[in-house]
Length: 124
Image (cartoon, rainbow, N blue to C red; front, side, top):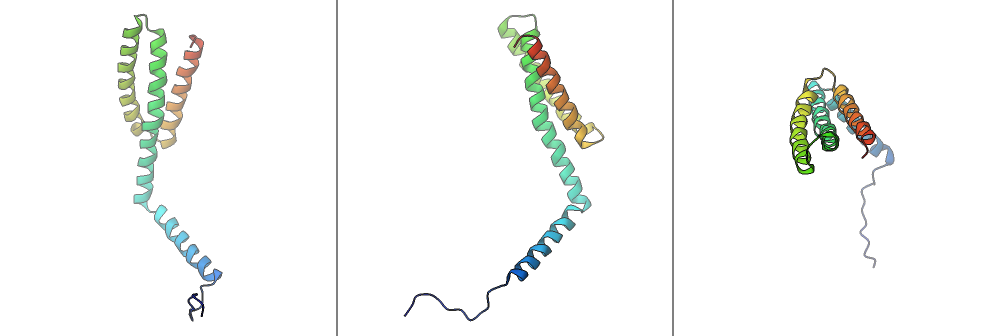
């Protein structure tokens, strides 16, 4: 007597599985094409640009300002960080004000690269 259960129901064929997966794929495509989903994705991309690219731009700006401000080291660091927080808030607002979503990514990334290049030129 074996302990393997015996079933009389036929197992699903691979064609049935492919058909079910294809139906789910079409449902996802229809969901993505809806206006509400498109709007939600655009807001998500803008928010991620504001948070990620804006943070990187603010951080590189803080590093640059720490190097070039003509004050003591403590005052440089404090002033640069305070200005970086202000810039970060402006970057978040900017990401939602541009006409196209990818412009926020492009502009904040270019600003980060510019600050980084100036930081390298200034000796850090």
